[in-house]
Length: 141
Image (cartoon, rainbow, N blue to C red):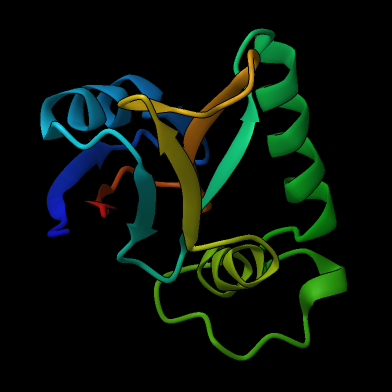
């Protein structure tokens, strides 16, 4: 069975979670594959991917706040040991956050539909403070 793939571009406005569940569903719907596995892969080292609740926006807010507290910007006293600051004080902390999370996800497809749970959504987790254009490869096989 041959697979199919597409490239999503997500424009971020800074740190936070950006849902792309609808885009992934449209891709799977149009692929004509009854059963398989959707792989989502982000092509960057300072953001990541999550499967997370998509019903209550407080969950996204709290996750973002937790990671900001867990890994503050390099100008915080607790992060003074960081050396890599080429693109500003959020540079190395963004790489640390990406290392703690995932850069790829696997979602089963059955009857031509993503097998996500009722409250699950797919998110790009932007770890940088300024806007970026992020690329996510979706591959269905």
